[in-house]
Length: 381
Ligand SMILES: *Cc1c(COP(=O)(O)O)cnc(C)c1O
Image 1 (cartoon, rainbow, N blue to C red):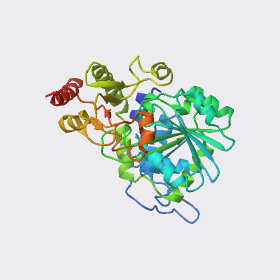
Image 2 (image 1 turned 120 degrees about the horizontal axis):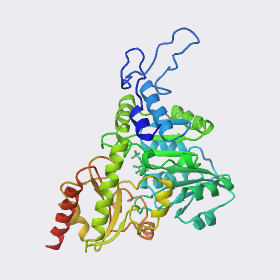
Image 3 (image 1 turned 90 degrees about the vertical axis):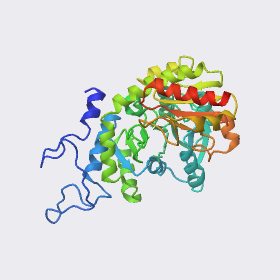
């Protein structure tokens, strides 16, 4: 079946008792046992809840993995994956990475003796140079947040397999609609489902999908043991969001391409980072490993003084953290999402005081461009 169909079929017809087309919200913490030694498959809802199970099975199908596991946030999913590693292990991580992931690696896991090398994973040579005897895994975002570096997944997964390393991909920016790293041989995919999968800026959630059930069981064990599960209502919201993922992603992509092109022509814009522009260094790789470019654009303005004006003047676009929802949001990464990354690293990777990130929503592109144009004009006056 095509992914559009799989998306719509997520969680459909799972209640034989009533024939309910959607998966009901099973607002239950515990489930009656038929008799001693027997279970309906559901005992206590930290371990499993039918609404969450429907979501977990759906994301496993969409990402072409064996096991899907749903968490209370994307970070809870990241924690479950990083808990696979122990004292003495070394990880190679995309240097331009979600600030929260950087924070847990540096503040929590370094305490436990896990070391990390941050490199530009788009450059295979940098990855090779960072390899150590203790290296256990590669943790990749592609495109990266916010600099939109594109890592060649096929190449890097080949390297990981040669070195017997796990490949972990944070696939939040692309969603399974545009990119399926497990199908290319990655071992684990992580989503902040608070973003495109939920899609409506109304739920915080995380999903992890494992290519093989052995790894999947380890993640599931951690989920039950640590307990940061996704509740039934939020699981239902994700099932609801997933159905329209294809339509939304197409529109995000279409709008982002128009806006990125417009931004490149604006005199107050120094540089536009969008992998759907044919001038982007990752354009060709994106065309091979993804079926679209997504809705995330970063751009550098010509002076830091422009930033506060733009953030104050935008009216259709909202100045807010997060991304991936139907509403367009603008973020100032250096002060918001990436504030936990030291200034020296931020400047080296390009997260400067001139960089803005735009999560392009599904409004009419002309209204978004007009909003940006008027906000820029306010600076010029
Ligand atoms: C938001 C985000 C996360 C963290 O997810 P939460 O749901 O906010 O906990 C992780 N990775 C990426 C790429 C993100 O954008």
